[in-house]
Length: 134
Image 1 (cartoon, one colour):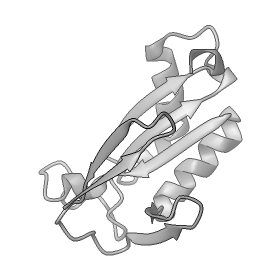
Image 2 (tube, one colour):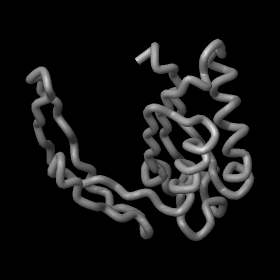
Image 3 (cartoon, helix red, strand yellow):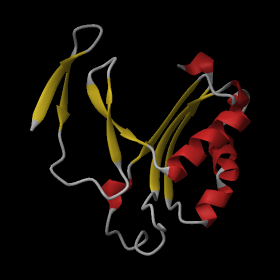
């Protein structure tokens, strides 16, 4: 199933719906402003969001649990704990990244999330920018 959505500049965006069921613990909620479904974060996702907000004071922060896209992968089985939250995509816009290259920005994020990485977080996809870069 697909859905075509018009963006602010009338550019058409086509969204493809996945036919795979969401794993247990994943909750979809309705965003009344955009009238769309949004996947709510589980406990690990909320801890990631809170930690990054505390330490980086981002002007923009997106935390998306993409674990369902990796279900059954060898590196994931048995490491997720009860919630199944193993893979996340992050977009962080923060002044804390000023004068730091890409590798140092990613290292900052990994260092902040070290406890999660030691307790079942398997992978992060990170976009780390300064406000001037967006």
